[in-house]
Length: 108
Image 1 (cartoon, rainbow, N blue to C red):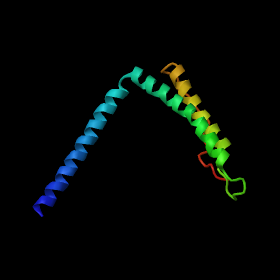
Image 2: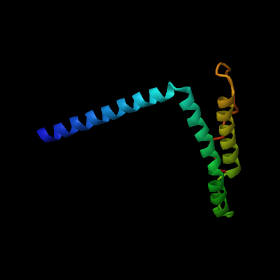
Image 3: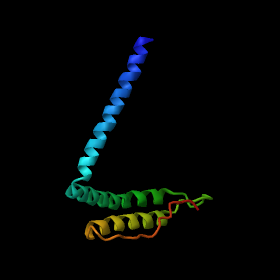
């Protein structure tokens, strides 16, 4: 029983260490505006890279299903997201922005 308590305590310590390390690294990364900008630029490229995957999934969808996934809505939401990130990258830091809401529900 003593060994089980030690394992739980050790696991909890490792988890706490991991979370503390993650918070430290994240806070340092967020404190660097250039690093944030680079991460956001990478994110816009990743969103753009989804286009061929979406096209492939759409081409494999059965037109006879009763409930269909709305790929056009997904593309619109991804474009809004990408545009919002790009606007944040391009805009002055002190200017607040508003964006249209995402659909979020892609079933019809």
